[in-house]
Image 1 (cartoon, rainbow, N blue to C red):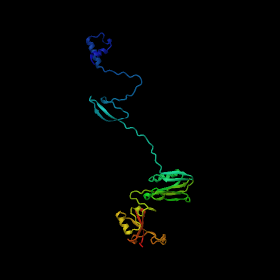
Image 2: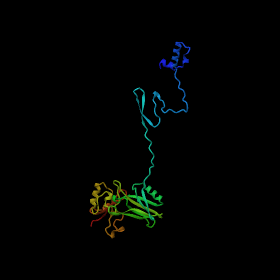
Image 3: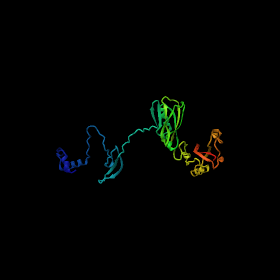
Image 4: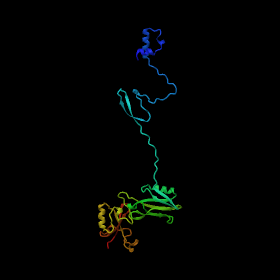
Length: 289
């Protein structure tokens, strides 16, 4: 500030009765004295940009400081980016594992999610007042979703629903019908797709041996099937007697508890190969003739 501008800002009375030296001294005192800031009138407000060292102001809301650069004037500048918006909370609604359709006096039940936790099946049945133990077992791909087994304590009142052509060229049971007033226990097993390398039992319409990773075994010799099993690293083999007449049914067969491996000949014929317990493969065999 120049002396002329300081003088212009002074009231005339401030310089009255002063010598030239006194005026110069007054001007010097005014310039050297810090100017006080008058208190703001009205309601006090919090500053939007709080002061920090070096005269830099940083926004305190909704921004994140990621770096500091230097302006051409030599003053540091804050580099900021907007904070990411808050993710909206969407409720996680779990899809139903079963479908329930009321038809007359019956409740029709089908499996919608064949890989659901079995506890979910039990919960959904219970929500409809039903005491049903539903399980899923591996089966041939063309029979996935089929009813493999039904057991009830209500005199056979639980019915199975069939769907022509649903399982390949066959007519399959794809659901169950339970009377609305039914309160007894029911056990149902539905077929599901097998996992990689998982064994499953075959049935009518399936290729004998496909459930344990073998090609069609029907009519082949034991020696031939065993050679294929070795190539595919299937080593746990058990043998069962295959009846070929009524005289060999049930307890009348020579080996009702299974055939010892040393009794099976290489030229015997294989009729089927199914999954046993604990990864065992059971070959149903009979002497050639």
